[in-house]
Image (cartoon, rainbow, N blue to C red; front, side):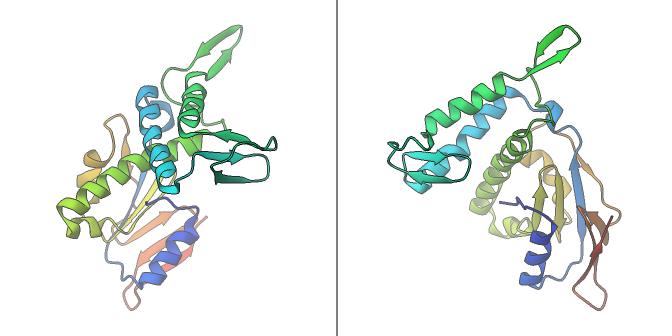
Length: 213
């Protein structure tokens, strides 16, 4: 929900919906990696893992350097297997054992995660997803019209783009925890630069997109 792989995902959705843009905005988490509380990070990550395991209906996820798949059998020695509980414990161990060396001193990181590790973007991505998912599920139950206003929201890690939702900024505190600071980076309400694209509301067309460096 909201998560994209690149700007092409945004372009594809806008074109498929034949959306006529009348308001655009971009947002950036200025303190994402450095302010993630470990206890909350671990708690939030357990939820989507449990949800996915229940959805798949399988006991284990198997992985090696070439393949990853769901299974009820863990007999092959070619793969490493994780149950839901084991995967949650592995992620907890990863978060609890982040160390930084400074000169001759070694420090254990107790808040935030270092951007240089290969797991950091994935942890941050899933962490934000859990709040977005909960917000959308709750909003759909209470007010489907309001939920539809958020259906054209896209996020790549810590960069967020919202289309045709003038009130998005009013709901930031209802979506994300107070530890995270989300700043408005919009050029204007009719033109924004998002990732490698320039997105502009249209006059004679639905919208205009060009490459942004």
